[in-house]
Image (cartoon, rainbow, N blue to C red; front, side):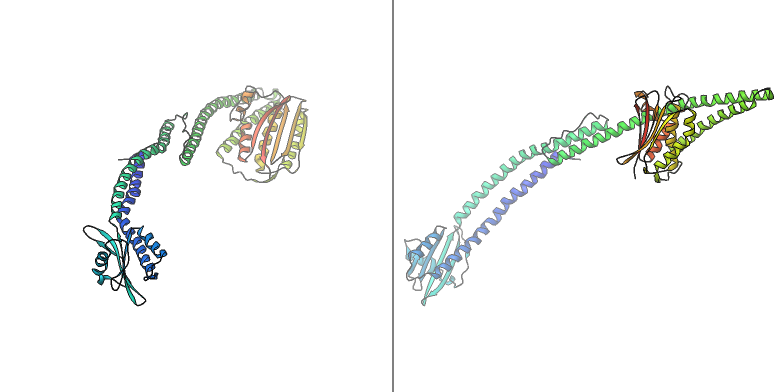
Length: 466
């Protein structure tokens, strides 16, 4: 059977109190009388040593003060010489009787090296010392006694009082322990309730973090942090699931679109072949051959894009990263496309900063830059402007391509990076170019984006500089 934390805490604290308080009383009851006798024996031995130092033939006021001090500690003295003449007695009445009772009767018990003896009679309990010593060739007998019966009576009543204290302490301790256990167990029980709700996917609840105890407060804080992370990842999973559903929908749309795109050039090629077959030399064969080549090239470009995106998605091509001078790559590409720009009479401004080095795969970088440049070329009207730049900005190398043209709608700025996405003005494309750029740049630890600028659009990507 599982026990609650609160019950366990009360039981443990009760046992602790019982051991500490009850154990203290038990130790007091067993060892207090022994400890008292031991300490008192030392006092009696000390008194005997001081008596031996006194002049027994002439006790001075200072000597009498010593006797008085010890008598205030419950000691009594009987001192006599070898002729049993009293030298000093605590009780001043019946001195001969005291000498007889304390010395004569016990004369055989006296020793020059006496030990304190515990006497336990029916009526009384006492500590006694029977000592003797010589002084000026005269033998003296010293009898020192303490009646411990009174002290033991104090012990008896003290034990009874301590038992009462034990009971009262345990009672008050139980009340305090119950209150304290509630303070500790309540936030833990609260955490258990909150965790149950979170397990039921209710992420609106959190644990309160104002508990007095630092450890419990730290546990609550860490639990809330864990709940926040869990909520974030679950929401992210749900979002990714929605994205996958959206991607699946887009793939279906793409299948329909690509089927349509392939169907058109195939129909054109088929019709032109029929004309060539039926008309023979009566038509301009070179014109139709050129038209067929254009349609074949168009289909080839579509298939090439599909293969590229498939390769990137499944990482079938290995990325070999090495130190790459991106400045040299962009200068080469700007020169390669110069004739193409001139055909369209574009005003192209190229600004390539030297020594822009990155850690990258050259082929992939050329492909990403090509997609940006051709995308801009396709959306730039005859005689209008384009800008291509490469700059160092802090620890990043930033490549930008700007073209004059219509801006991109705000609701499409995020969508254009998705695979197979075709905007309202991009129906003649399969929607893979920008997705390829985003994938390549991401594989190299970079970022990419788009901004509407002035009278046109600027695409950019950045890579860590080396």
